[in-house]
Amino acid sequence: MPESGVSRAQQIRTTDTAPQGAPLPGRATAAARRTGLLVTLVLGGLTALPPLSMDMYLPALPAVTDALHAPAATVQLTLTACLTGMALGQVVVGPMSDRWGRRRPLLLGMAVYVLATALCIFAPSAGLLIAFRLIQGLAGAAGIVIARAVVRDMYDGVAMARFFSTLMLISGVAPVIAPVIGGQVLRLTDWRGIFAVLTVVGLLLTFVVWKWLGETLPPSERHTGGVRDALRTMRGLLADRVFTGYMIAGSLAFAALFAYVSASPFVIQEIYGASPQTFSLLFGINSIGLITVGQINGKLLVGRISLDKALTFGLVVIVAAATALLLMTSGVFGDVGLVPVAAGLFVLMSAMGLAMPNTNAQALMRTKHAAGSASALLGTSQFLIGAIASPLVGIAGEETAVPMAVVQLVCAAGALVCFLGLCRPWQRPSAI
Image (cartoon, rainbow, N blue to C red):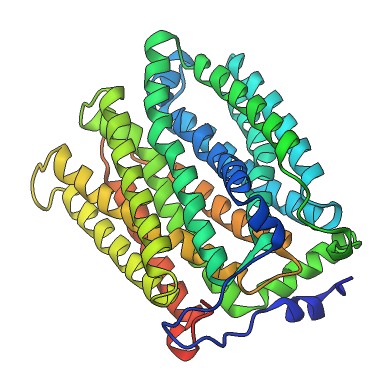
């Protein structure tokens, strides 16, 4: 059984031995080969649940503002609460899954998620809706963190990087269809109906997990320590400068993405006057761009060029797109209208297909025997920073898109600086 503490964190780090730009032999366990398609679908569903929970709800944000008589900034806190819950929940669930296996914590989390989502249907005020969304996020964190840990249990090297890109394809379908579904639900009922649909989705996914997702962490590889051991393991992981660099870079990129997710309903519908259906269409197009680039990354780039090179290019494009958005929304080019702004958002979102899977894969390559804890750190960092970015985009109310562009640019530039400053890819051969 792995020894606890910093020494174990040192033990689980991966030595970078592959030549720069050359493929590292990937590994898929026997369990992965036997159940590859089924596991892909189940894990894809788990990773799709968080964007589904948020993106179906996006077209309803203005309606929630009116129905609950709350300002836009307060209603945006319902997104922040869900993100915060997902961040904090991963800190708990990740180490739990290293100790008790992946299956039991996942089923418990899914059951609580269903209950919290059902409570959202009956929320009479913005305050209670925020509270229920916090619980929803805490429980939904189980799906995110355990899905990543299962991937690390079953895959290694190039195989793991490609699997993450495949997961991005499946989970990316959620942002494509979720706003469309949300917009159509709003045509039939009010915003509460969206949470009714999410409750049914949660129930179905819980059944699928119970029926078809087996345990992937053998008892011999589980950790027996308590909270102190889990914290010591996380501290050891954070002492790895390269792991921390990938973690922070990925988290800041995610924050730039979530600034778009949080602000776009108001920017597209209130500032530029688009309908909920038009917003849903634009959101879906942007998600298709992210999925497409993610698949190019997984099918064409992984194994042919260094993931660090692909990551660098993706972050540079995100910074450039955020800069262009700031110039357009601040009036430097005059009143440019919706189309140029939508084009800038499309480029920014598409480049996320290079940033997100590669930061996750490279960070998890630094660990093996504490994949749950490492996954928890990655997810917690992403969602906490995203939760901080979310309310910042509403500082100026619904009058301008400048706060969204500023937050995106600051986060994107910070991601690039952290990646180059902490990971220093030019000083070491790539892990993949």
